Length: 150
Image 1 (cartoon, rainbow, N blue to C red):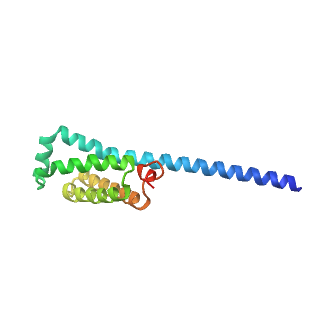
Image 2 (cartoon, rainbow, N blue to C red):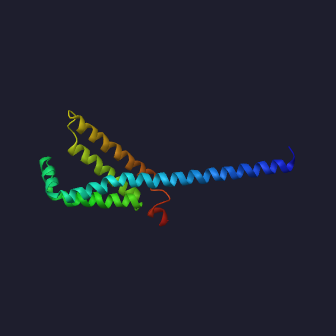
Image 3 (tube, rainbow, N blue to C red):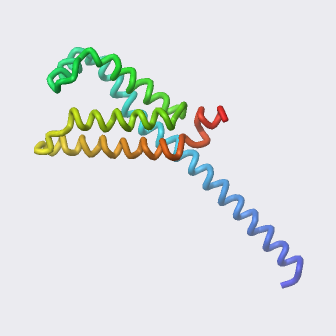
């Protein structure tokens, strides 16, 4: 291999590596944004459904021993927290708080493990809390308001 062939091979390898890195970055950015939107959609839609079924939600909360007067706080937590996660605003703090909120709701509303549906709901909440803890540790990513404020 002569010197010009070696230089050409090295340049091609560098370009391939740069393209691979660019593809990885784009995939990571899209996955982080998509993951945040999917995770937050559950909370935004849940908050909106509680507004639509306000009386029924108060009744359910009361039946579980939770004062219905807390419903506005619950709705605000789900709507505002969900939107903050979707847009990547104050992600680490909001994700940590929503992880706690999600675990608390699991412990209050889904502890009847004799009912398979309740056990699945409990485990779903635990899994969601895990996703929030990953956001707490890793942040929102480049496609977020958090990255724009740096």
